[in-house]
Image 1: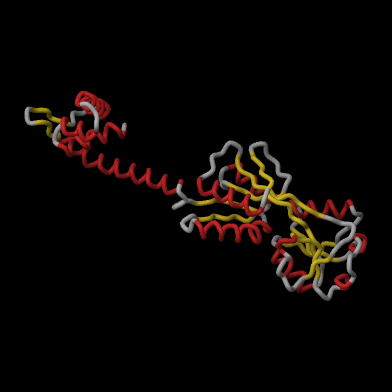
Image 2: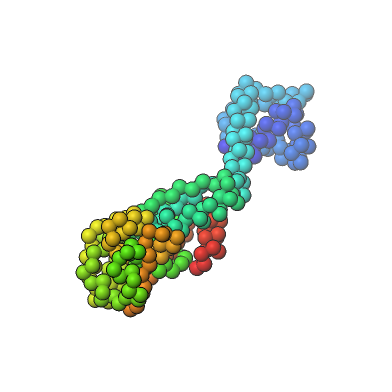
Amino acid sequence: MDLLLLHSFLVVAESGGVTAAATRLHITQPALSRRLQQLEEQLGAPLLDRGRRGVQLTELGRLVQREGRLIVARYELLKERVRAHQQLREGTVRIGGGATAVSFVLPAAIARFQAAYPSVRFQVKEAGSSEVARDVRAGQLEVGLVTLPVQGRELEVRPLMMDRIVLVARPDHPLAGSGRIRARELDGLPFVGFEGGTAIRQIIDTALRDAGVEMNIVMELRSIPAILRMVASTGNLAFVSQVGVESNPDVTQLSVRDLRIERQLAVVIRQGAHLSPAAAAFLDQLDQSLGA
């Protein structure tokens, strides 16, 4: 049903005549009569009885008036909801990321955004980069924060920040007082590692293998907070994101003279996708705060 035709009919019903309705609608009387005729043709029923005293609604015309008011009101509500999303008075950001992003990158960014737009909600999923990228491709997430590289031609990749991977230990670990150590001193020592197969674990394993170091992984965990707690409890070593170590008094960062491990964090969205206004605005803020 054409909402313009329906709205014109409702104005006629409220005005009690075509002439008065045409004046309210700022169109000519013949143009309004054509609209009414088109609506009757679409519905397959007469809606108005036309006489010398003007027009009166038929019984079906009264039905169309009652239901039409609801349809028009619902459409006006829909337009208002769309405006609210565009003005960030409503909206939901569906975003996913790995443990580092969810624990240390997103919280502050989301807090800043919600301070400006308190009605925008966030649905945050923590998962590995490959799963996050898969969910973005499938449309289950609008935005993903992943470790590069990721697979998928369907994804648009926007580099976000470089993340330094550092060695941490308990303050009383024998290596903690050694100053700058060499990579070969780590060979065979017990480590708490990220789960095998994750992007960050692959980057760490490759860097150490290239340095001739074989880690003795005695435990695998998913999140940086869990790894840091385990390091503080067991005295084992770990490689973690530098952003997760800052302001943690239970572990200390060790400097490895001949080893530098970094990874590129990036935003991925589905190629050609039109982001919701809330997601687009949040990504703009994220780019400005972290830098591309």
